[in-house]
Image 1 (tube, rainbow, N blue to C red):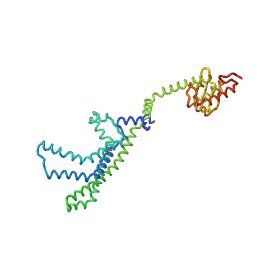
Image 2: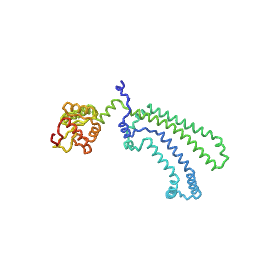
Image 3: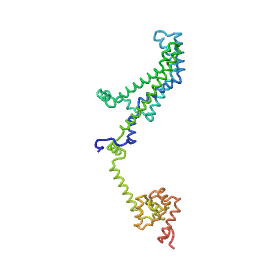
Image 4: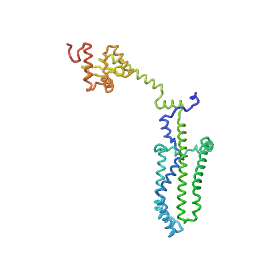
Length: 360
């Protein structure tokens, strides 16, 4: 009996997912964000590295060749004002790329922009050392620690293998000029970092899959939670059932009083039933006094037969009346002709004169 133990055996509803999202609870992986940001930074360096190095080298050379910095506060401020714009211009592509990439990665992981002010509010319960120790030594905390150690081992292994493959070239750098081995080391470091970033990305994908699975497990619902949510959204099921029963009884009472007064009932033949009444002295056009589908159609048909109201099968007319005309509303002009034909047919069967004419 899983319900007695509160087993979460039901998939989360959309309402539960929306509530969790409003509280800022979404499936996300910080490792995936870090790996993608690292790849974005490497891509920016790949595109603008030469220009960045050239501008920084030019700026450095200019100030080393012609030092004008005075060793006082005003001299330092003047130096920063003179060179800050150049420094920002050199680093702007890299900085803009990182900001855009960070926003895009966050939006992709959370499924859109997510603004949760209460998440940035101070939570004094997190300052409790006992609660912090419980989080650290919990199963999830130990799993996170183990995964972190595994990442360090993987990153170290990838870096060592990449550098070991270049050991001969690195040992021979002393024979080259300084600019040459500087560019070579930058190239080696770039590709080594790229390999580490790819390895971190693969691990981050696994971490995101685990976080997604854990998020879905946390959102699962017990039977009691599902019942409470349905009661919150729709109301008490007993009250809803009672309300529907009262509404059904009101409809049946109205049909029971209106159908015996009708002149004809048009059917489809058993799926739909529409009762019509026409009094030329009080009505400008025939009116629909009752209509129904399914069980109500059978009820109208049975009442019509019990009270001697003619039942005429007209499939297309019954469908049109049921869809276009509400109860106690007149028939629209486009249905005058088929309704008049039905009424004429009924009056002829009963040997009655047509409304507004004298008997022959």
